[in-house]
Length: 333
Image (tube, rainbow, N blue to C red; front, side, top):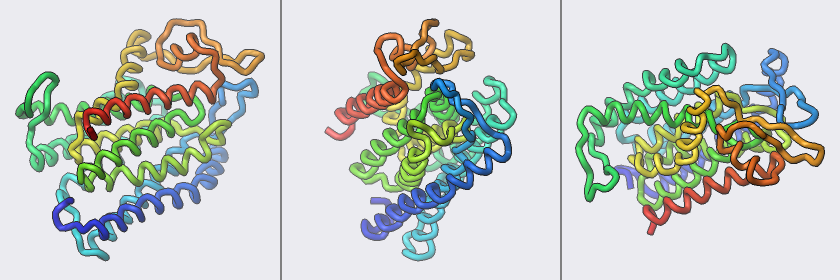
């Protein structure tokens, strides 16, 4: 248990953050969708025959719901329950990083930033987090094949900065189908929340539970057939939240393992110099068809399995669940 916290007090605050994030996101999404449509921020649902125009940047509602959940936790812990929040500098710098990554997503959705800029910009928002995290937790990490933790010194700063930009951009790459990104965010956040609870890393839950709640609420509007697209606003944001959560945990090794599908996606996209898209065409039976080179995990599933859009999304979700199950053998058992 985090020093100064009681299980009852912390549990109430964390539970409230989850339900507040769900309620606020559900309440705001109709307004977000209406606002984006009026502003002309729309995109075509390219994986369907109708190719309907849907509002973009649904991630704005997720960010607002998420922030409401986090602030609820902090207010309850500090002002109502009097528990206090440990590692305040780490928490504040983590929130700065998360909002910065979300801001990059908003700018990208509006102005279509270059990939190279989007790839490296999150690192700058991660600088304060890297400094305070190393100050609080040290610079030791468990290296592959090592029997114990190794001190990597100043390289820990670079590792944290890289982790933020890799997670946010990795989450952004594995998207393009109704509900895909939101479902991945839910699966990863739920599994990491379980790990954090079992290991007593309750500060991590301050970041994870609002993401879980907001993403569940958003899936209500983004699942097949979608009423709104998440945009890079959501995908970059949720990747940034996961990165910050595992750094604050600290659960860096587990977080890296859970992003294996995104890492694979990165190398597949690299073969196209990051120009490939995940979209496919629908045949007369409603199944997806793609005949080009395999430059995405979605391409592999479409080429090797007879799937429609909903089935494709479930298979990618299933792959992430399998990765989480493998991680549980090393962490929970």
